[in-house]
Image (cartoon, rainbow, N blue to C red; front, side, top):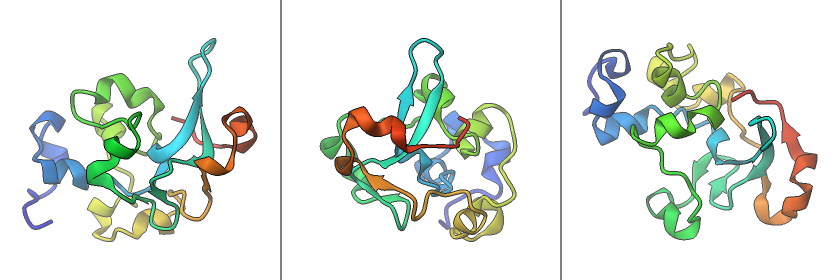
Amino acid sequence: MTDLRPRFWETVPLNKLTQQEWEALCDGCGKCCLNKLEYEDTGEVAYTRIACRLLDGDTCRCRDYPNRKQHVPECVVLTPKTLPKIAYWMPATCAYKLLFQKKRLPDWHPLLTGDPESTHRAGQSIRGMTIPEGAVPEDDWEDYLIEETP
């Protein structure tokens, strides 16, 4: 991460970030890789404990990030262009969403602490709480809802 401009997230618009800076915004919480339920009548988005089949529940990282679309065609690739369309279902603490909304990063964010474990220590990740999506029939996902306000 040596090519990151100092405090780039405060000075550079999202659509002007380098690929390395864009990726560095991810706090490693893993919440975006949880399966969600969207209720058509209200537009409400509910998070489940059921993780994408590629998510490693211990590291909160994708097992094959560069090739994820090949394994999970429905995986949403987040870019400055797609962000406005999908920000509504992203976690409330997500740096991409916060910066899109012109808000500050939380104090525990790894870009501020310099420590990738700070997200987990702050209790902001899903480490150790997920269930693989193949273990639960989709009709039963509502039984595995968690508190997360997008």
